[in-house]
Length: 173
Length: 173
Image (cartoon, chains in turn purple, brown):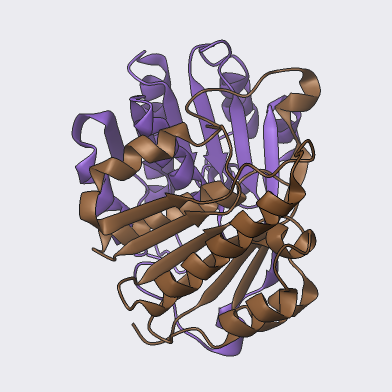
């Protein structure tokens, strides 16, 4: 590996986390050791947890967020969980154990000011050179886009939710 | 499964095939039987072939295109290969063996008029209801967008190729 890339999948469209999963799938094929950290705990993540087991030692998947939503009753606890998750992410990146680290929905921590944007972007800017990092989430801040090697924006052109079809097992979760 | 979805990942940005791979990863976790057909043979697909083996019977991966490029010396052979690949795709979809079929870079067959657009869109419109289909590739035609349940356009905001960094093993292939 010559240079560690910082890649960002952002935008309102579907496929950000899915693209990150695909990147993991590809990297695992090369025998890379991969760490995926999910900063927002969601209900739609069952399929990949099971798939992850097939790769045993190669893939560490951590769901660290406390299920932050707009309905949250205890923002302080959410913020604390987010900060602990970010600390864990930094340790994972610095551990030297991985060739790819995926920070899923990290942008939300910046958007809702749970962790300081400058702190996150500053850290990612100087990340170890022999490691690739993928960040996903809506509304990637300009400062992150500026330091990233690759930024793809997923735009929603058409979505079946709009036609009243519910989320489908094996497709969205 | 209630309704088979037709999903399209298009646009010029990175992450179309990668998102499809992520969807496969998720679906396999649920024990879905998956078929992925690659219509354009490329050199950057090594990682996923190896990963695919981990899922054994659950994932059938077919690389059917003849490596169609602008450099091709024998367009007629490319067209024939594309048509055979499309026939194979229809058989796979109609076989009843799969819950998810990924048609990777299918849009190119329409764009370069190797297979008739109406034929492809017509077939996909009436595909079996108990099966999800994912189509990837640039320039998805309007007629395909019209019948799809989900369309995401990947927009390239920033790409490291532009800064002179080469494609990276485990990330792009």
